[in-house]
Image (cartoon, rainbow, N blue to C red; front, top):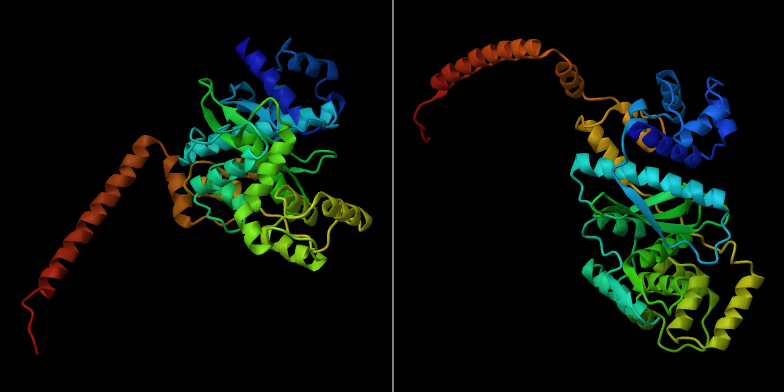
Length: 396
């Protein structure tokens, strides 16, 4: 019964994460099972035969044992837009994908000794009014020793502080979300900030900073969570002191060319920068509205000039390759984690070591014994050679 429930949970999550209907999954499996049977498996009313289980594993490119293994963590989601019009089907797919990704990364963390998330500042910064977000952003930057300068790589900062960055193929009306993976003892094992793949760099950076706000802020019930998270994100990317120093404390006019320069400086869109200047009372409400109308007229809400390249996460590839090089996981597992074929030439020593470990114990002992005898004679020869070359130092 435990296996039946686990299989049901695993199967449904994998199917939803791939965006497959039951009919589509039946077709992908070559019609070796019916839609009705799959439905029973997902409802834990029946269990697949070993043949069907292996076919499911092949279809989803996982090992059959994956369906029988209880999840190490459960995933909680934070930060969906309150007024989001995201379809339930798409929301379920996103949650299934992120759950699968975080579970994989928790496993990779464990085998490589990467720190878990027990020290992450989740909801560590309590705010009771919108202005408190400025203080919270300053405190987090100080705790992370970021100084006051603009952040060159938002993805790098997050991964340096053990927060996973997860990119999903763009889904309509989805901007981002944050998620936390906890174990059975409700101890945090990992946190992930999720964004859409393919968006501009400035939009990606603010989305990540925004979701970071949802992760670290403890927001009072009287506050708009989205507004607070946005204000925090903007303050994290563009600290007030730096804005005042480089743009000024009061401006009646600001040129388009200036904003495009500051866009590259802070890694934020012109629209977000203008809002930041208004929030800091650098520009008036009237002037802010003028800029919003101009941005609409120029169609900059969709695409601004000088779009920045999106940042790339390196943690998964770097850690998976390390685990492979150290013999902790195999090639198939690397390909499953990265979602792509993996082609690299292994060092001969690594190939030999893996082949050696597959030999029976007695055979390994025999080989080691032979090598020890060879080394013994080798060192004896070296010792004799050393004696012939030894002697008192003579100064000339």
